[in-house]
Every structure is written in structure tokens, then in C-alpha cells.
Length: 121
Image (cartoon, rainbow, N blue to C red; front, side):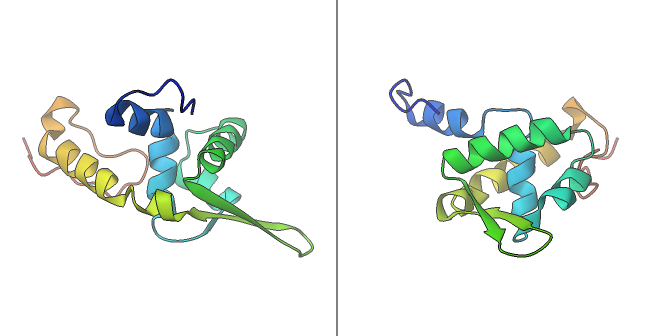
């Protein structure tokens, strides 16, 4: 995120979560620390390369924490930082809005398989 260019609070927020997969990554991390492989399985349409890139950006922007454990084989976990956790309310409201307006895109969630439409046709 280029903090010098962001001028309004909404623009600042969007610059942090801008990216096709960042919101879904944050959603997966709400449950607690997750390893790379499990994140990749949880979001099946994301490539490993793009997941790595998005995780690096989220870490650089302070939304997640990457922990490397001194084990063999190496174990790396990702978890929400305090700032990332503070976005939970935003993600919850986005989900509610999406569920209430599911007629705009009336298909079952293909990523998490958890979001059931509220407005059944």
C-alpha cells in the first residue's frame, strides 16, 4: 500500500485489501493460524504463486503475521495481526450484504462452501 497516495479512509481500507484473493485469505485466517498448504486447499482456485504474493503483501501491510518455526521440515504459519483482526467487522458486514443481495449472483459460494443464500428463489 502506498500510504502517501491514499487520501480518504475508504481508499486506505481498499488499498489494504485490494486483490482478488486478499479478503478470502483474511476470512480463512479468522479461525486461527493456518499453514500455506491448508490456505491453498481452502481457496482452490488460487495458484501457489499468487497466494505467496498476496500473503507477502498482507504481511508487509501489517494485516497478517508470518511465523517460521525452527523445525525440520520447516513449518510456517500465518495468522491475523491485531490490525487484521480489526477487519473482522468489515468482513462480517460484507458477508451479510452479500447474503442479503445474493440475487445479484445467485450461486453457492464456490470458495468456502459455508455461505448459504438467505433469499432463496
